Image (cartoon, rainbow, N blue to C red; front, side, top):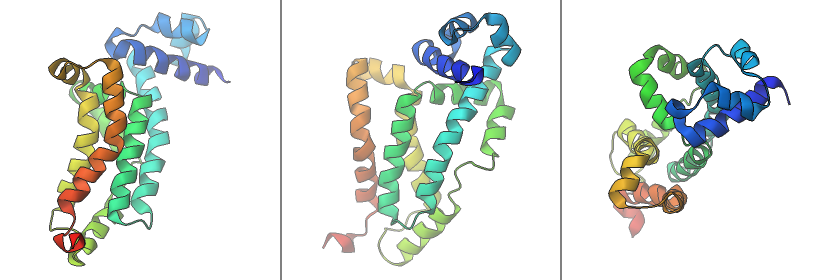
Length: 202
């Protein structure tokens, strides 16, 4: 394992335990089994390290999402695969949604950089497919981007507002984890049932 891989693995562990704000470079260095000077040589500060860890994780998620968007599956199956893949990914990297929201306010240039990344998920083909399936009477008339927004928001929000949800619903970490596992399929079915043409129900 390279030094960079050790740092990324250690950073993911510490960020997951402490969150971005609570994590310390010394803790990450200790977890990686290197000294703090070496960590700072590789990454000058915590934000640059987090951005590198984020881009590393993003490079693993983006191909999965693009493969789903560009596949020959019907829209319903793509919705099922998207919610399952995205929630599975964030459950392994639960600190990412909160970091993105923080960075949108503190460092919008970084957010725009990753949104313009060539490997970012490209929904162009999916949008065209949604329009075709609407025309074919498979899906009820809906703006394709509204549908995509529903898919994204219903999967992202519970993680971005995790503390608020746990507090309001009075649920433990274990209960939250169980509910997120359930949402891998329940979100998809809710969305599909809301957009499925009534003709398909007969």
